[in-house]
Length: 443
Image (cartoon, rainbow, N blue to C red; front, side):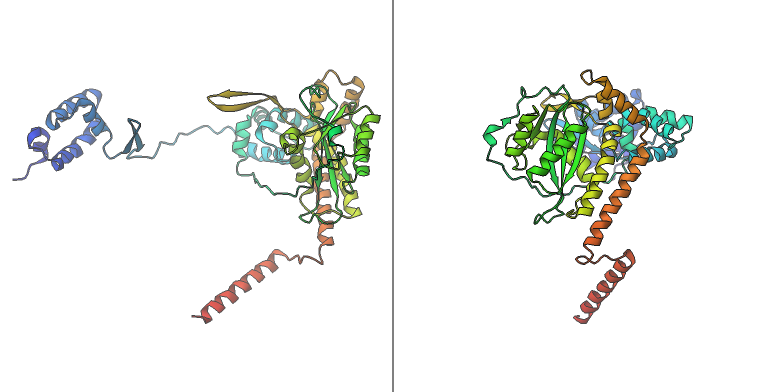
C-alpha cells in the first residue's frame, strides 16, 4: 500500500528510504520558505524528528532546496536562487536625454576628454562658451551640468566612446657619439615644481613607410605646468631640431631652464649641446629603453600629436605648411582648453597600488596659480584668453585636418583607388555572387 504525503511527514526515521526523504523535503521546503519565524521553528522540529538530521543541516537543506551550491574551503557557496529576477527599482532620472545631448556636445568640443579631466573644468568651460555666444542653456540643465560627477559623465558617454589603438613606427636611433657628455636625468637634476623644464620628443609621420624623407613633429611639454608646444620640421636633422627648440623658447610664457630627451641621435649631437650651453639650458637624457623616464611627453605624443595629425605620411611642402598652421591653433586650444591631471602620490593598500591625482586644470590655470611666473606673462595670457573661442578653434582644427587628409588622398590617388560606398557594395555583391556560382558549379 502506497504512503500518502501526510504519512511521509510523520513517519519514523528508521522506515524512510532516500527516495522517501527527498519526497518529504519536496513537501516541506516550499512551506518552510514561505512560513513565518515561529512556523519555521515547528516545521524544523518536525523535519529533524522524521529524518534524523542535525538542526543546522536540516535548516540548510530546506533553505537551499533547488538552489545550486558547492563547497569551497569549508564554506558553502550558493550559485543561484530559483527566482533570479530581481525587482527593478524605479529610480528618479536626474540626467535626462537633454542633459546627455548637451554633455555630448561639450565632450566633443573638448576633444573627447575622460570624465575625471572633464568634470572639474565644465563649470568654467560652460561660462566661456556662453560668453562667446556658442551655447545657450536652460537654468536647470546648466545647474545639472555644473554639478555632474566624473563617474556619471563616463556612464552617460559610454555608448558614445570609440576606443582604438594603432601601433606606429619607432624612429629613435641611439646616439652614442656624445652620450657620456650628457647627464642622465635624476631626481636631483631638476626642480619639477618650477616652470621651465621641458620633456622633448619627436613624432614621425611616415604613414607605415619609413623610407625616404618625411615630416616630424617636435613635441615639448613643461613638467610643472603641462604647457605644451608642437613644431613641424622637415626631417630629424639637428639643424631643424635646434631651430624648432629656439622657436619654442621664444614663445614660452616662462624662461626655458632645461630640456630632457631620449637617447636618439636627433638629440644627442654637438649642435644641440652647443645651443644649450650658449643659452644656459640644462640638457639631460633618460635611461636607455626606459620610456617611463619621459612619461609626460610620451602621453602627449598620442593625445595631442597623433590624435590631430593621424597616421598618414606627410612628405610634401604643402602638407608641412598646413601642419604648421594647425600647430598655431593647436597650441591655443591645448593650453587654454584642455585640462589634465598630475600624479601627486602613490600608496599601497593590501598589495594594490593606488595612484592619487590632483584636480584637473588647464596649463593656463596652472600658470595663473604659480607664484614663480611673472605677472606680466600672466596678464598677457589673460588678455589672450578673453579673445579666444574654443568652439571656433576646434572647428578650425577639424577643417584643417580634413584639408590635410585631402592632400594625402590627392597625392596617393595614383597608388590607391578610392571608391564610394555604393561602388564598394556593388563590387562586394558581385564577388560574393561569383563565389556562390563557382561553388554551385563544383557540386
